Length: 170
Image (cartoon, rainbow, N blue to C red; front, side):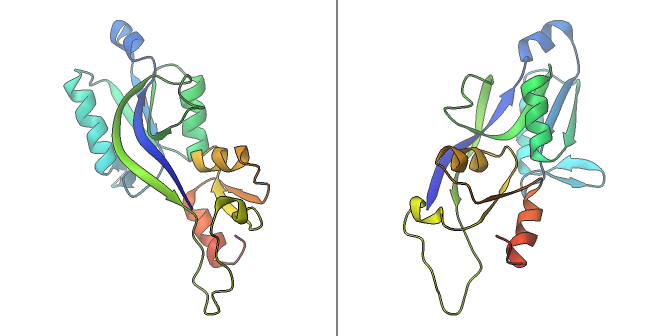
């Protein structure tokens, strides 16, 4: 089962920042595209963001890595916050000022391989009977809840979901 969505940058109050010369707080979560190395947030998506800010003449910013729910909450509630990577959805469209697309992604449900191949999920509705690990406030969490899923196990970080998958909890 696939859910399509574009992952994009969001610039919060960018014009206000330009006028008032306030520091932009750039936030994201740990992913293969955004991660810590030697105490700094790096990765291919981070490089795109930094280059975009440089080209816009904005050099007063700090990049921080938080669990997704915290980054998302900061972007919703605090001024001068830029959040990336965030999926652009109809529900989020009016909540943010969208600046640009970094990549297209597809979301999938997955499970551990089993020798007996006991179950197959041919459509999203059939997945409702299984316990699914999601991250708090993530686009997949919001999507599945909106579709009536109730057997969701919520984690703060994606690595927690992998641990739960390996232990058979999801």
